[in-house]
Structures are given as C-alpha cells and as structure tokens.
Length: 307
Image 1: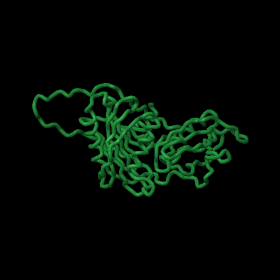
Image 2: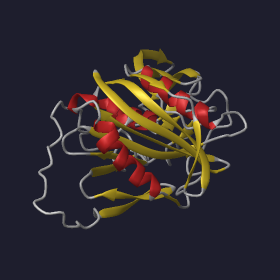
Image 3: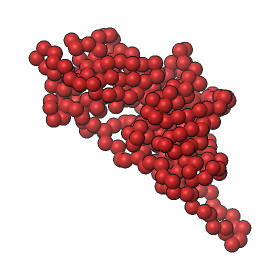
Image 4: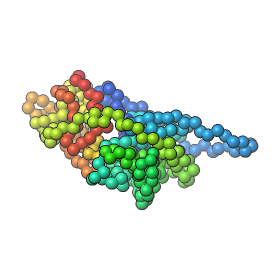
C-alpha cells in the first residue's frame, strides 16, 4: 500500500523525477493514521494573528505556495503534500495530454480508475467548470476509501497548454473527524490552488519514444537496460517507473517471469493502466540508449546510462 500511496497521492507518493542512481529512492511517504487533529485552544483575547507563512515550491511546469504547517516532497515530477498527523494528503502533477482524444473529465476518471486498480474506491460528483492560474479546468468532489480508511476530498484537471494537463487531488482522513475535510483539508487545498502559477515545462521532449512498434513488445527487440544479475533488476524498475500512459496516465507493472531468448535471458513485465495493457520484454544483460515503447510517454528523460 505504501507504493500505491507514493504513486497516487502524496509524493511522498510518486511525484517527481528519480535520482540518477539506478533506481529512484524517494523518502518514505507518510501513511494515514487515525490520530485526531489537535484541538485548538481559544485565544484569551481576540487579537489578530499574522497570515500563515508559506514556501514557494516549483515543480515541473507549475509552482505554488505550500503552508509551512505542511510537509512536501517532489518525486518524479509530482509534488506531494502532507500534514504531520497523516490526516491530509495531496498531490499535484503536470503530464502530457492530447485534448483531441481525451477531455479533462477523462483525466479525472482515468485517475480514479487507476487508483481503483490499486485497491482504493472513489466516487465523484458532477464536474463543474473552474479557472486556475488563468486557465480553464474542471473540478469534482470525491469520497471513498483509501488505504482502508474513509476519505473526502476534491480533484481538479486544468489544461494550461494544448499538449499538457495539470492534475491535483487532495483528501482528508475522516477517521479524524467527519468534517475534517471541510474545516481543514479543503482550506489547505484551496489556498494552494489559489497560489498556482504555470511555468515552462522542463525537459520537454526529453524522453525519446520509439517509432519501431516492435521495440519492447517482442523478444527479438527487447528494451536493453543493462546491469547484469546484480544491478539489472533495479535498473528495470527504474526504467518502468519512468513510463506513463499515452496521455500521462499512471501505470502499474508486475514481473511475470523470465524467458530464454537466443544467448540471453529476458524479463517479462505486464504493464497496465487506463486504456493500456501491454507485455514488455527487458534485457538486463545488454545496454543501448533507452526509449519509451511506441504508445507510451514518460515522466522525464531516462537517467540510466551505460553501466
């Protein structure tokens, strides 16, 4: 479940680009706890208090202000936000997008479907139009189960440019109180969205995509990550962690075993996501400059050099 949360919500989920090491190693993400929110102590006098301080955080393609009361991490270009009690989680990301084939509601629905495949259960309200950072978008209210705990929250999708989409989701753990989203989580989430600014996407086009439709899909043309017996498995996972669906969808993968092929051994992975179901062949005993298979996109450039 920790890996699921990494990928799906808190970046302290999987948000951001991996390190140059063979496999990205983000810090552990906090998980939901049932610790109640602290009960505020009334001030003795009605004196005005200063506005909460915040730090400006710039991720790939956007920036926003994160209140100092919250923690944050950027992993694989996803910005994850959390409170220390583990009662509020949010993630923000900007990914490739083709508005000709997918609507903004499709982006949200694909996300809900993806986390549903990982055990979460969300239902959403009807979408309403919004404007964020000067760009059009849609917003939905969410409720459901995440990591076996009841949650309530909100998700938004905005199109800052014709080839990318900004997606954000924030939820509160209702075990801390039935109204904790309305009184606390939504306040944090709205404040961060109000501070949103879109900036230039880094490393645009930094991930080469193969034009050979057999690349990775056949034993005769495997993805050669290198690393041999000891480093190869970590390099395979680092490669797969960098893949996204054709419209930036989060993917899941599972190793199905190995097959002998000529003078080498290939590892077989089943990769799934919204509108994507593929089997990929990876070779950890040979290396060549890496590409994404036809029909995939990536988080960013591949950081695996020749071993």
